[in-house]
Length: 191
Image (tube, rainbow, N blue to C red; front, side):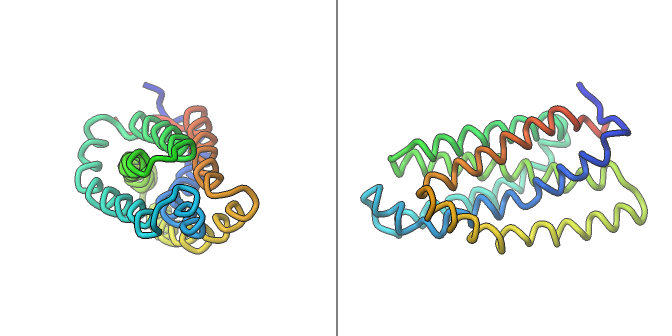
């Protein structure tokens, strides 16, 4: 298993901060598209809102067990797998017109994002100590809080320019870029 190199700690830290807001982006980026999704998929807006409910419940419940799983199997490997699952599930949602498929993929997406966020929050505790650890862990909340602010703007722009599916292509591209960067620069940071 690849180990985090000392010279890559800085970029791995940047990547961890880039992944922390993914939970909020996945939740809020497509909210401006709800009416358009409902119209295009011939569903009620409440059916579309159910995709958000499924995401929130799955995301919340999965956090009860992802920490112990990541401790057992290693955060680096699980993070890479979760980014791949996020990439594939986002593409699946973008390509689907079936609400049941979208709901299932949102559930899978939420679990994958839960693993990503838990692993990346633990990164700061695994790698840093003392004041540096305190500073970085306090910055996590600030970075995380940017997603609910920025995501609706990004989602609204994507909706107007390209349609609702663009929101999920955006999530897929985000996951793919970070998957590649994580694979290149990060590594196992706990024995």
